Image (cartoon, rainbow, N blue to C red; front, side, top):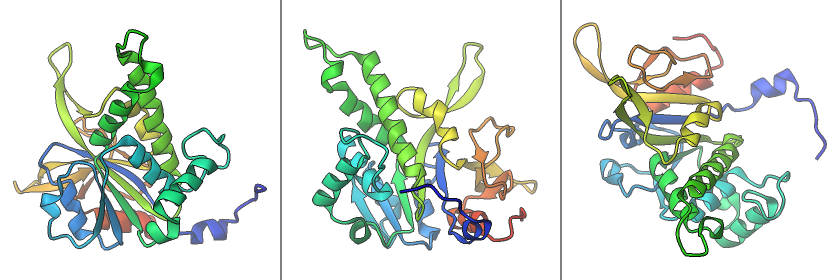
Length: 268
């Protein structure tokens, strides 16, 4: 397909979709964000942790293998014609997925949001897969752990980059945030994921990075909020590419999506 210039009118009229990663400590209620979403949503359940949303009326799919997660991402994002046939997310891979799962519009067409729970477990599935690939098994049968981490990081970034280009759906991933100590006994926050490569490069791929945490307001009341701005006083990972969000927003995913999609881009 030949390249073409998209007019300002066409670009501004097109629906906006966001690619969001939300980190937070275990138990803060990341999965329960589903309760307030009004967009038709597919929950990609990798944690078998849907007890908190047992009454939620949406659809879900359970993923236990990296290959299945990769196939689902390929179906959601469609084929990448620039990739050779032996690469994930190529036209050949997409044709295989359609033959196995069905046509994109039939399987995932009705969903406006895909909620991946969680990127922490996704990285573990990728690592389990990477460790048993032939390139990471020595002749004596031992595993090349360093090689497996490298392969896992590359494959995770391929999947995330593929989802970045989904034009007709919001993509939201949640993950665990843990507190650590550096060599000088200072605390800092880090996403709980296998390896470090994905965590370093993730903010450059997605539109938004939020930390969901408890926050005490000026009147002493505690609320669950999203920290959306880099350089916050808690040291939480955060980024807002939209420029439409306040540094601290109520932990209401639908309200945040509405602000990002608002025609008037002023911060409220």
